[in-house]
Length: 331
Image 1: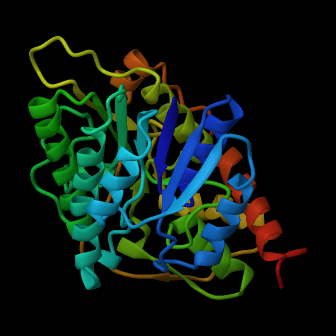
Image 2 (image 1 turned 60 degrees about the horizontal axis):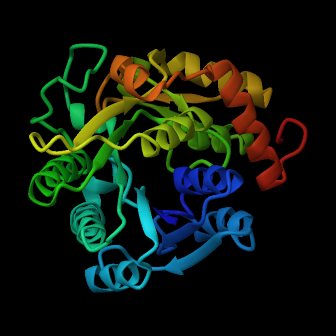
C-alpha cells in the first residue's frame, strides 16, 4: 500500500513525508515546484526526501486533472492521500486571484476525482485553513462556528474545498478529513510567513511592517505539532455508517493566541537583535485574531500541541541561520 502526499516539496508536505517514510510507509510525492516563492527552497526540502527508501516523486500541477487522474489510475496500490498542495497566502490573493481557483478549487476537485477511481482508497486527508472563520469575533474558533463570510479569496477557496469534500463524501462515500491549520511556523517554513519575514528583516537590518498598529493575535502552531495532527488524522478515517457523509473537519492549532508584538519579541531574542518596526493599518483580507478550539481534535485524534513559541521560534531561527549561512548576530 502507498500514500500520496501532494505538496511534498512544500513546508508541511515535506515534514509529513519525512514522518511517514520514517515509519516505513511508501510515499508518492507530488509537487509542481512553482515560483510563488524561491523554488530553491522547495528543491532543498525535496532533496531530503529523494533517495529515501519508499519515496518517489512526480512533478505535476494538480490543476491538470487529466494528469492527476492518469497518475492515480496507474498506481492502484494507493490507499491513502494527504492533500496539502495549495496556493497559499491571503495578501497574494488580492493581486493574483486566478492561481487560487486553479490550485484550491480545480486542483482540489482533480484530487477527489483521482481518489474516487482508487479501488483501495481508505482515506483522503486535506488541508483547510483557519482563514475560513473570516471576521468571526467569537474566540476560540470552533468547527461548529459559522464560516459563510470569508474576508479573502484564499479563505473562500478553502471553504469551497470543504463543501466540495462534503459533496463527494455524500455522492461517492469517500472517507475524508479536512484540517483547518492555524498559522504554522518552524524550520523549512515559507518565506511569505511572518516568522520568516521578520527574521530575514532583522538579520538584514531592515524594518518590519507591523499591521493594525500591532494589535493582532495569532494562534501560532509549530510544525511538529501540525505533522503529529495530520498523521493522527490519517490513521483515523471517519466511519461510513450509511447516513451522513464520511467527512469530518478539525482545527489543528496551538490552542493559545499570542500577541503579535510578543511573537516579534521572541524572534528578537532568538536573533540577538532588535527589530525596527513600522506600524501600519490593517491589510485588506486580514483578520485581527485567530484562536483554535481543539477539543474535538483532542477527543478524536488525541491531538495535543506541545511547543510554545518560546521553544519553537529559537528552533526556526537556528534553522534560518544554518540554511542562509548567517553567523553571529547577522550584521
